[in-house]
Length: 152
View (cartoon, rainbow, N blue to C red):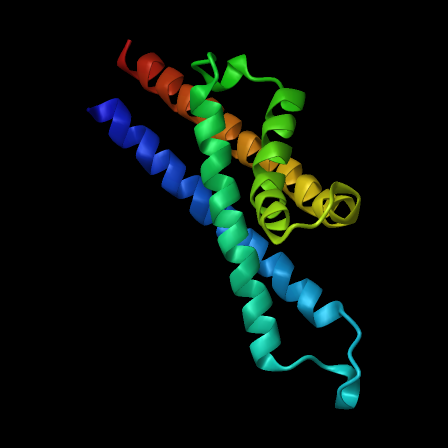
């Protein structure tokens, strides 16, 4: 039961991390796009809608990435390689937009330019999440070694 709760906590944490960072990227993209409105600025509702939609895509992609990691045969952070994690992140980042594009009936050639940024963002965030997890594991080992050295 404890392992299941730990996995759920990790999945939720990954989803929230991805949601927050994708919302920031969505906000930056919404502000950077040229507009024909006065002063070239987007409306507040447009920025909020872009941030919200990117946040939802990030949360679902982060959750899927965590599930993909758990479903692999590897048990520890040291068992994963960066290319493997990047590939799983790219799949997680592109899966939701691909399904939505397929549901709308658009062809794959139409979708490729739209899926590339999601794939890149998914791979980037997967490697960043992996680096955070690896760093936390190394810090925990250092603390444990210092505690053992102090006790003996």
